[in-house]
Length: 211
Image 1: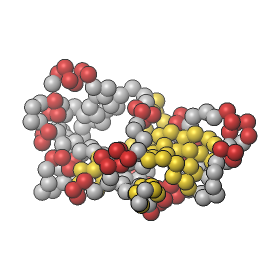
Image 2: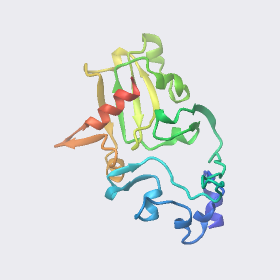
Image 3: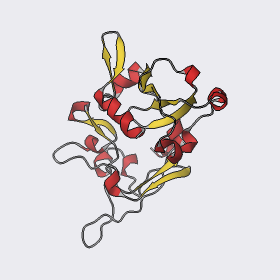
């Protein structure tokens, strides 16, 4: 396991190293009450694969006199701090920060076209915006956005009006079908007959993303 650990692109965000011990998963992950440790892992791991868990529930090694965890949280890899969230009520993640690096290499679930040229995500994560000379010359009329299976926008490409077909505010450009089958929990897209379309979940996500 030591050799495997050295080959990983990340380090653990915790001092708990039980994950690298044979059979140590139950000493590393905290599952939901009455469920196996796998429900504490990331991804489509709850409700038979149809409920998304957006984090890792890691068992702490230290607690204070009130029983609260006191383990330090570590960065998993080198990166650039792109955003710090200090208002827990505004997200599902509590206090958090975003490190750019691995984020750019996510697998694409789908690509969508958004007819909007200005929304907060662009400013907050400017490092995720790719250049497009045509849009720079003609003006930006919208953005092509790559989403991973969890609905994270990890690549944004400005598009000129001449590159956009149709009048819909949100347009589904493409879907990676294998990735959709592997990770279905967020239900962002669905196949109707021979055609793919954005679901209500997908449309709601885009509304929030571009609000």
